[in-house]
Length: 481
Image (cartoon, rainbow, N blue to C red; front, side):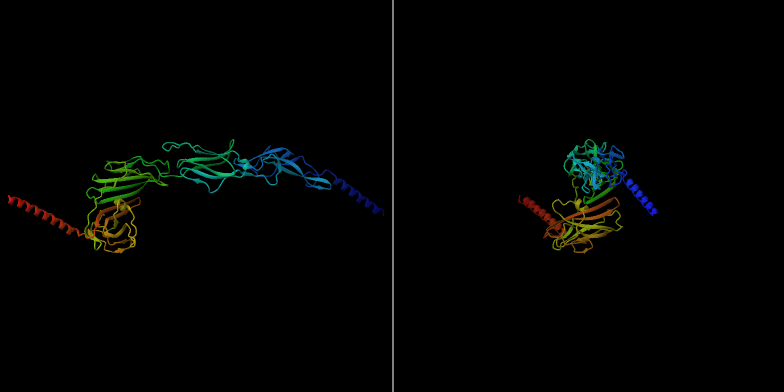
C-alpha cells in the first residue's frame, strides 16, 4: 500500500513540473502565441527590388523606400511593417507580421501579394512603323500614377558628316493618359535616330535606336565621255538615302549610215563601277544615255547625256527613218518585207523577232524595240504583237500578214486603212546587260492602193504626158508665129 502511495505522489509532482514548464515565456516566432514582436524580417519579394534602408530586420512602423532598375517601378514605393491580430487563443491575441504600402491618396493599405518590379511603359508589339521619313509607335502605361509628365523625344543618334549631313530634328512631345501614339515626322532617309521616353528628372522608361528606311538615290551629278578611251565616266554616288547597290544605264545608238537601224542596251552595273565603254563608239553614231543610281528602294532620277549636244534637257526621240515596204495588198492584207540578218556574223543562225505595231499618235520606236509584245488575241488584236520568229542567216523576202502562226507568234492579216510600224529585232542577253537591236519598217495599208511598182509606173506616165503636152505647146507657139 505504501508503495502505491509513493508512485501516486511521484506522478503528481511530474504533472506539476510539466504544467510549470508550459507557463514559461513563449517563442515569439511560433505562430499562434500571444506575443507581439517589435521587429519584422526583410520581405522575400522580387529580387530586383531595392530597399532603403537596406537591412535584414526593420522596426515596427519603420518606413522603407522601394525602388527598381531604370524603366521599372514597384507597385508600392513606400512600405512599413506592423503586427496584426490573427486570432484569439485562450483569451489571448495571436499576432502575425504584415506589410503595408502607401497608396496614391497617401493612405496605408495591407499588401496582400508580392511586390514586383513592373515595366512602367510598354511599346505595343507589332505597332512599330518605320518609313524613310518618319517613326511611329503605340505605347501603354501599366502604372498610370507613375506615368505623369512623361516626355518622348527624337534625336539624331550621332553626328553626321559630308556629303550626308543630316539636320537635327526637334521631335518632342508630352505624353498624357494611359496609352497613345508617338510619331517622329520630317526625318531623313537611311539615318540613325534615338527615340526616348522618360520621366523627370532623368528616369528612362524606354529607349530605341532605329534607322529610317532607304529611299531612291539622288540624280547623278555628272556623266561624260572620255574621248581617249571612248568610255562613259561618272562620279560615284554617296550612300546618303540608301546603300548604293549599283547603276542602271540605258544606251540608245543610231547609225548615221542607216537611219532605220537602232540599238538599245540596258545595263546594270555594280556600285564599284564608274565607267563603261560605249558599244561600237564612232563619231558617225548618235547616242542618248540615261544613268540612274540604285538602292534597295529602286532607281533614282536619271541623268541624261547626248553625244551630239551634251544636253541636260528632256530626252528627245532619235531621228528614225524607217525603211519602205513594197508589194502592199490591202485586199489580201499582206505586205512584202525585204529582210536582212542583223547579227554581225549572219552565217551563225540567230533568232530574230518580227514585231508589228499599229501606229498611233506618239508611237515611239524606242519603246517598241525595248517592250514586251502581248500575246496575239484574234477577238481583240493587241497594238503590238510578234508576227514571226525567224532564224535569219541570209537576206529574204517575207510576206507579212499571211496568216501563219506558231508558239508565241501569229502572222495575222493586215487591216486596210491602218498604219503599221514593223521592227526586225534581235535580242542578246548577258549577265549584266540586255541588248536590243532593231531595224524599222513603216507603211500604210490603204484601200484601193496599188502595189508599189505599179504606182511608180503611173507616176512616170504622168510625168511623160506632161512633158509631151509642154513640147506640143512650144511647137504650136513657134508655128503660129
